[in-house]
Image 1 (cartoon, rainbow, N blue to C red):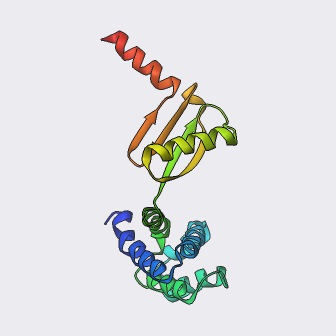
Image 2 (tube, rainbow, N blue to C red):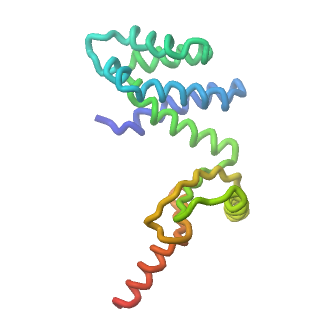
Image 3 (cartoon, rainbow, N blue to C red):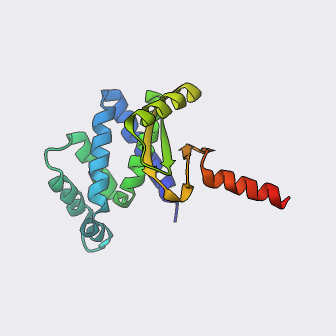
Length: 178
């Protein structure tokens, strides 16, 4: 079976093209987030995986749960996904859509791991420095990782900036072994 990312790509691209043409990138982002949340529910996952539950009923389930929260185009999108047996990859579709949206908006996602809770001023300063280095707007998600001992570790795409005490101790250990 194909990888979920491979299956999701054409649907994410189609949703992006539709949203971009309508000037509705943010609205579609919210729609896909809602759809992915519904798809992640255990009861819904059971319905999706039940071969005795027709695709039209599964699509109807999504539409009923999110009634009034999305457009007719989004309803059609759900129906197409259901007909093609692709509702289980809604989380991946959303993730790939967000990547396309961020590229269009010149935004880069940064995962920031800190040994200690960071204050808003510290986060703002870090984001400002990252924006200066990347030349793009940075959207940072900050989480605490006590295993770092001290400092921060930043992941932007496939680039890792590890300024943690744990990394420095590891480098020192390697240098002493050599």
